[in-house]
Image 1 (tube, rainbow, N blue to C red):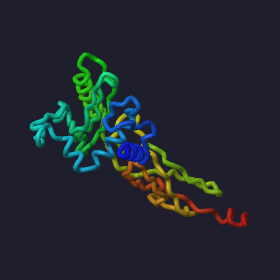
Image 2: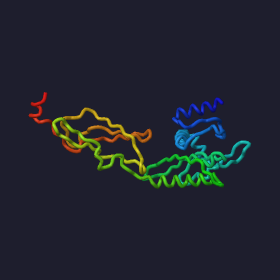
Image 3: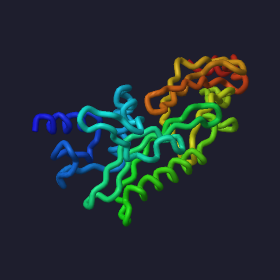
Image 4: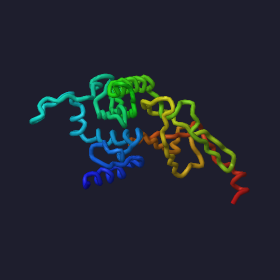
Length: 235
């Protein structure tokens, strides 16, 4: 039970809020999880080089047991490099997988989970569904700019009425898909009272799941300072 306790402690540390282990094999009905949690678990596990090497093996020769084959027959198809199949009468066909492909010259890693495939051959069904899911996901991906070329990122409005739009003149691009969201944080320092076109205004830090891209925002035109009359009539 000490190992099961360690498994649950690790699940908490990984943020797997819907996961609980009642045994080490997963056969106990008290062991539960969700597809979203399994994806997070798969990402963490594949970060361990020894683990990722083991699950990528199609076969292995072990002492006493001899030659054993991997039930993950998707290995090597549609970029799939692992991770784990799991099938029984209660859960149906289940498969946590990782696939890798190059999209627009960038290597993309996809982690997915399929659960509850209930057919006469659940393992075949879940492996087939995983291939279809990976193929569809990679097909939907494309190279997109972090900030669209025509997007207005902000505007400076001064107390004396001068105004200028703030934009990203050049935006790095990433591989994304429809509906892909990128949390961002804007950092702006002291603003100048007078600016020329291209003056640096701030930085938009875009979070890509642990990887941060900084997009510099600049004034899209000149920003005039206050007039002499405005200064004289203000303290």
